[in-house]
Image (tube, rainbow over the protein chains, first blue to last red):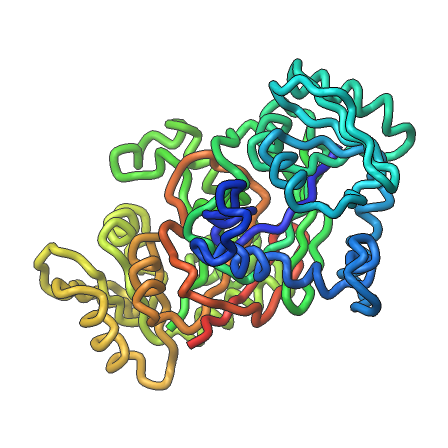
Length: 209
Length: 209
């Protein structure tokens, strides 16, 4: 199981103001502009553009390969409630997963199938139960924790994450959703791979077991 | 003016417990072991070992060159009070700067000359005054903000930093001295250079003016 996220220089994965209450107010705290800076490198990539049907063209270098590899290895995603709520508002009708997705939430809800092969399942009994269900559905592929930070931190603390990639983007948020909070020193890691691109630095860490 | 620091995966430049009160108690919160993990790559480098007289040998690759270049470009360092207090306790008699060092502090104290060319000057009227004095002393060389985080953040917020390098080390601290806190989105940066080494990822950011 892994996660793969873009982080600001000061360690946030979402800017302040990027929430359901301000979904229609992109100028609030400049959240849209800040988030666009965080994700700028992604929006230039051919694979991402095709997957979200954003249009033709795009870069086809190493950054693009990384996005495509991450997508291909993912058999299932796990999301937290807030991440899902935000996505439900923002994803296109054909959600970008094209796999089963397990949402860890207290909300009881029937599975929700979307065009293109994404089905959301709502898990009410915690992260370990979500993982068991995800394993069964993933087959020989890997499981990606899609975020947000809270569910990532829960899995990391529980010792259930094998590796993770951080894409360090050159932007300061000041406030927002912090990627790591309260991760104890008992979580030990080593660098598996680091790739320097022009507008982002990708670092993959392996968690020592 | 620049700064150059090692940071944990979760964004700290010093672990909790690494303070004057626990200087003789390295097992407290395992601060010594945690700090050693943060700095592991540095202690292996030939230049660092020679500069601190830690002994013969050491690595001579790209990490070593980076340390040596950072040292050679530095004509003056600026430190905050806590950083100086910790250093006064831990540096060898021949302090590792070998240049003038300006300490931003409320403590009134005469300049303190050490063997090997380091002289500490104590500045009581704030960061801009320290910078003016540092510029005069630096000549054609650059000025390094040696830390801690508080003085780094003050200079960054004041728009006085030209670039900075973060050495991302594969360790979680959980708690400690956070490198970036309250840096607003008005501070905009771009990646100048990123270098992937085996045990650390070096990223240099340029501050846009």
